[in-house]
Image (cartoon, rainbow, N blue to C red; front, side, top):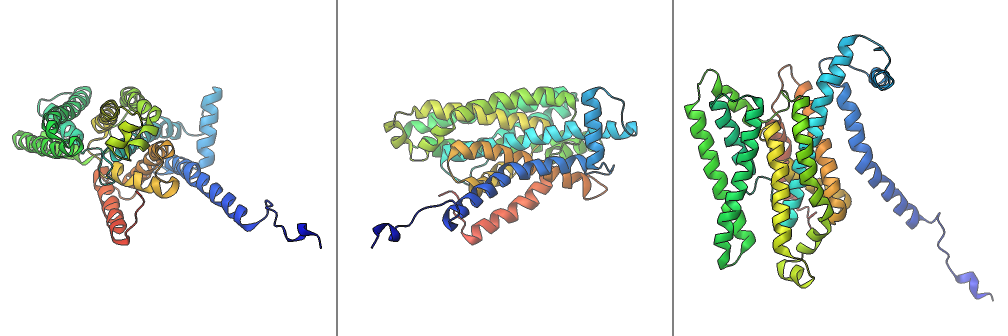
Length: 357
């Protein structure tokens, strides 16, 4: 009797290996194919219909320096109206999602969002104050950005004083809640002092969040800030895995937790403040998207952080498509993200989905 007859050989056609290959293929499609499909769809959606063949012809003509293949209005809508708005949605969504994922890893809490340290509340107050003082679009963005960064700096300063007695992470979170409340109250005072016919509606509409007024000049400011904020997080993302074990364990593994916390807070705050200064306050993106990303790629920050940025870009782009296409009147993005994000998060809580673990 030949003993080799009873041996089992692993061949590529076996079901277990086939299932593994299928899962990897599905994961690749979910990571890259879904955002790309949303991107293509976004160019065609809107009150002015543009088909995919038209879009391809226009882009090819402009790349090769050829005349427009169709009506000039189609090229104007596609390249000068939709393209800047789509780029802004990608940058804002990616920035908010990456900041949310980084904060969740830093604080080891999946309930943390990018505005946990007061960046959104400070940026909102800065924009409202700039509108009250009749600043132009550039002044509004600058004031919003500086106030967002200032709010987090104040939170970090007060939190560092409180944390001398222990509990640095908890002190930061609690201080951030207090600072957010203060800046929200200051925004309400600003709205109370605003002209009810002109400035108050403008402040209220801006605080709801949206990309309807975004243009190429905004991208020139937004893109470098997002790049500066995202690069350190991507380079140090593996250390967020170590921080998830706890501060003492991370220090035992040779990680300078104070430095990593400082870099993460500064980079995430830069991303949040830059996004809010252009789009207004858009909630739930930095809270929901990292959860969706964990369902696809797991909790490893080497993959989770870039996928969260990619999914955040696609998610906000899709929401913006709905905002500008669902009704004759454009829906503010902050309203839609809340209406979509809150039920989803409640569903996670009810079903007991433990994607964080």
